Length: 522
Image (cartoon, rainbow, N blue to C red):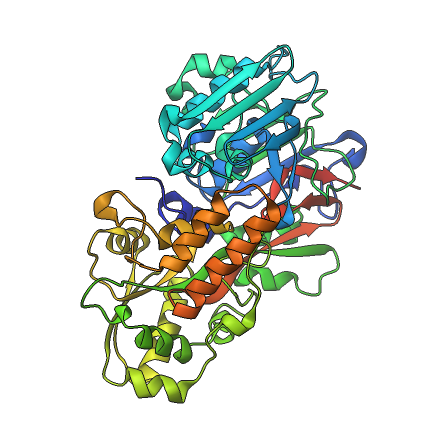
């Protein structure tokens, strides 16, 4: 089964402790000696180790952090779903054929030329080994139903699909689709997973030293020019070296920021408040988790009744949910956040809070609410439980550890009625796979057995076209169908705060810290 894009496994650890990044080797108060003039060394603290250096097997934020620096995708994805050049300079895409033209002069980390043939071999491996390939090429195009060919003379790579699928470009922009040079492919999966493979890297950095469980040092590739062209690319120079060190927790990272040992750290918890009003730091916020209520709609469950779903929507408040986490997130208007391409922002589609009306339906209704305690000890789940109890429901709250929650909710015929889904993806197509199609027993990802024909029809329409206007029109109809039926009750995001000392700049395309954009500016 493809890996869930909810908060699970190593992804859970990454989202709760997150990566924390970038400190210089110099004294407190500014970048290391040389600073922007030399590029310098930037230290990066993380609170979880790398599980695999193989880009196709990444499962957590630290994995994505490192592999995104080593293995560059063909394209990048900017705010609002705009695609930007990466290793590919130009492209054309239809629902059944995508052709990309590589930039001139691309090289692998050993200085050898990166050819179209090597890109094809890397993508074929991705197609065969990565769980994310299902949504890159479409479930109907599994295996050799997706054709991948290349032409070294013209520097072009062509992807064809048997069934129409309009999400190929989005899939190719993901970290998992990062291109591996021939040396890495020849070395094999075990060698790639362990770390440095000479000549394998296509990204701006190559591995210099690796000490599992302790630290990793990456060295800037001289002459690398194939950076993604994000709209907000900062000025300055990339660091000559990145030193990634494993730290204990966010409190330690905040201490290191305040003492000058760190220059940049993403922080999700209350430690971020230490920097409020401190003009020696700047803060950027972005969603890391998108929370919404979903239902088990199998026969005999209260969630099968649309009146019950609507009453639950009336009993809760997205703004109140957000306050549970300090009010630093954003109230949602769909199951993804406002930075997503084609997201619905029509608040009239949302069921308004009406506690009196909720009581008329929910009084005496038994609801088994299960949620993950991975974020703030499950405080959001507790808020939902108390809101439903206030509306008269008899609520059994299970604040489970993340592994138990993931097993219970994703299992066929799982024993639960409602859950707060912690979605980590910000893409409509990827997040929407959990709301249609077959149930787990039949090999699908529809964990709640949702049956919304209007949504399913428009999901297919949206993912079967590459025309932006047609795609967004279909997505608007799809989201409206879910919201009107209260199959999804949007709550709010839990945000990460990227706290940076002056002199360090970076971009957050699509709300995600992208370390290939990190620059030392002064």
